[in-house]
Length: 138
Image 1 (spheres, rainbow, N blue to C red):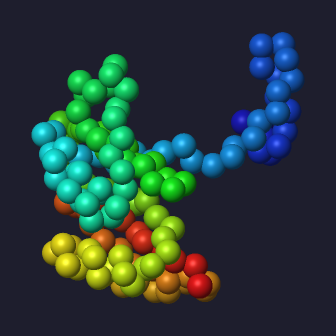
Image 2: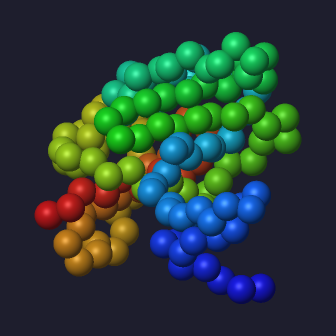
């Protein structure tokens, strides 16, 4: 397998095109069926993300989508749901201490970990047990 640099031109349909990975469009986590209200309570009311409508053709699958400045989180239903306890998303935030207080006020346990140079961080879990990391640059 030949590895490509992210700025390398590749032949696609007879045309050389530049391949550039620019960032994330969204992150998807799993959730159990029928828990959309719990998702909204946590992701919208506690974290402050805005719930956005799913496209009509995807609505029947269940789940919920949330958006904030520069971030989009999709929660998709898994019938055989198991939370992501090691794999996780890391959300870059401003106001880390205030967010920790808000989470704790909502009854969410927060866990400190080794602080990394230039960053402060902690972990918490969503209502379904998915691990979330919250990071603030300093």
